Length: 525
Image (cartoon, rainbow, N blue to C red; front, top):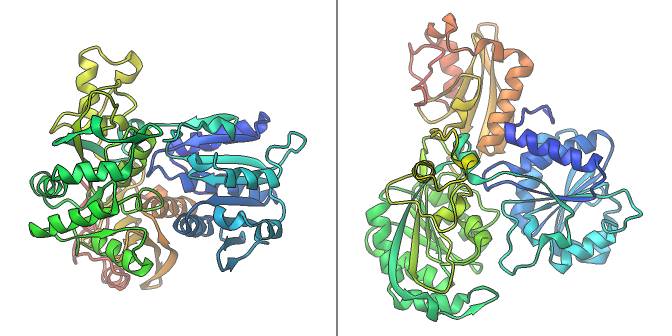
């Protein structure tokens, strides 16, 4: 399967907008898509188009995790295109698509070995004004008006930078952007609930630098105000059972907060930049499996970290930076099986001088200074403010609240298995998405009839839920299964056969004997 995957509506809009920018002669353009919107699928579809014409593409990222995630997704999208990694001891500079860390390519020798590219994609492009990125782009000829190539595409969840440096130093245009609230309304991101927890801390007395609070000073003030204990109590009182990520200004406060949460009987651990990679991965896996409920961190899990199962974020690092706030809080916006909303707990102090970000900052449809009141969702907050006439007319029009269930948004009939597997079932075959137990990735199978038996064919492994859905639906359409997935089909009432039951169990999907084929398990609400 290649770029035939059917993009979501906004993903197709972003793809088309980038192509228009290129055809119009723009050399360097930027698109902004919220965390969880599937930006890798979008730039992967653009790379697929370029690869089909024989072009080489470079994907630049600033962490090993981002490089590995992008390479894994691109290999799934482009199985017949060579996708290589250039970072540290990984060295495949001759691949048609090279995914590399900026830290490695700042080495002129490593960069020269990669040769020329017709396209460069910069992941987390709000970092692109850094001199290291600009040196690489300069070497590749991206700023030379005499060159046609490379075409540069920046992708980010936010075009805001805490240091105030404008991305216009690198990019000529914003080719496409969509906001968090738009995707909440469409049902692609989790709706947001929020609570503000007031601390006895005077933020006006905290040292600032570059327009934001100095981390060490903020950490000391928050700790003196008893923030760790208050965070623990807030999780206990407002987020019982929610899997939670806590953002703090210092490593010390992250550790103190984890200790305070453990002290009230809620399992929690802290990670930092000093945490060994294997230990850090085990902690993340424990949160995903449910062995841990809370993970605390300081500026480690803000980018390149995907755990859609998380449904609560404690923002215990007050900030004036909208970009930093969005990057952090965005970790809990991704939809997940059975997840209807996410909760954001803002730990705030008193200030008359600073504009501190809050959950309302995530919602571009809300006027500045708005709040999401306790107990209401972001959708309800917009509707409430719209009713007062305080919103621009376009922002408040046609407001609808949609349960977060991207599978029910599909025109195909997805059902949920007893162990939270997803199935797209036809009369004689099916596509099955089976979540892995150890992390948030999925495996995709095609189950097809072979005589009196059924065989399971692995379509993809270790992909995220959005990619798994796209791959399965693409396969269904190409094999004609989509014509058999209407909910009204009579065959759906036939009981699951022994052969089907046997093969479903063989690939880890649980169903009950006698249940109709079209309902191998409880249907998603």
